[in-house]
Amino acid sequence: MKRRTFIQNASLTGIGVVAGAAALSCKDEKDSTTQASSRSNSAAMIATIPVVIATWNVPTSTAKAWEVLQEGKSALEAIEQGCMVEEANAEGQSVGIGGLPDRDGKVTLDACIMNKHGDYGAVVCMQNIVHPISVARKVMEDTPHVIFAGKGAEEYAVSIGFKRENLLTESSKKAWEKWRKTSLYKPIINIENHDTIGMLAIDKNGDISGGCTTSGLAYKMAGRVGDSAIIGSGLFIDNEIGGATATGLGEEVLKTVGSFLIVELMRQGKSPQEACEEAIGRIIKKTPVFKDFQVGYIAVNKAGETGAYCIHEGFTMMQYQNNENENIPVDFYNKA
Ligand code: SD4
Figure: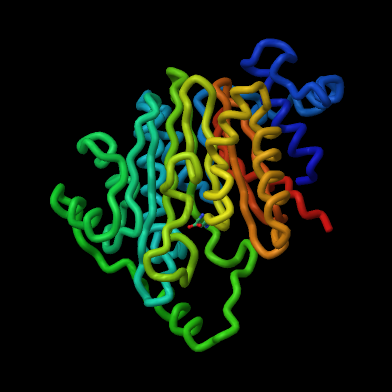
């Protein structure tokens, strides 16, 4: 999808629920009205709730979350169950079981969850547990703390009934062994372990929750923690405003506190699309070597309008809205 089309879609989401043109981007207001009629037969592009969006091409995860929302359950429940689908998928090499390991061959997982109250729970660098998103929820709901790390996270999970399992599948082990033999390793944009699931949902009551789950960068240094489980970076939810989540090179997202930034920009009146573009702009401005890495953001506001933006071509967003589960190519900065 071309940049213009994507922006058009994002702007159009204002016409379903949001009153009038106030929610449309000012710079494109006239344009958007024209575009609205040309897209009026596409129900999926009209902002309604419930809605689920997720990073990358994860139709079964968004479908699960949608099913949960259709049962009238909370966005929080939808987020947990949606993320669990991909965590349990051994074929996926960047979330849960099957995730590519660190440079020592250990699969370490980061995940977090936020609810409509702004409560937050996370686990970082946790091994041997298939569903870090569920452990993160338990940290949030059943402990006085917000982040559990490493061995402590694993032991806490086991103490409340999670089973220890080997997360290193044969194919991920083979990939790691191959990597160990090469000294020329360098991350490859979009191919190198970018399937982190960041998921945002609004339920029938209009309440927002979000989650983010990953095995992090492939072959990272032991102990490295990325953005995905860190509040404000990999994920942020404010039930009055909306939510945002990230994928890509976590170090860059952390340094710009990207998801919090996007929610604050939406609070100031920017559309989800505009806010994602500005957050990517901050990274580009600070980091001249942006050509070597990918970062992508997705966002939703309280009305169910969505937006997404990234540095390089290749990032997509799943959007389940108006009974349609769609994988949308995301507009990108680096057109060179
Ligand atoms: C990280 N942001 O650990 C994650 C990696 C990622 O798609 O998003 N991959 O830095």
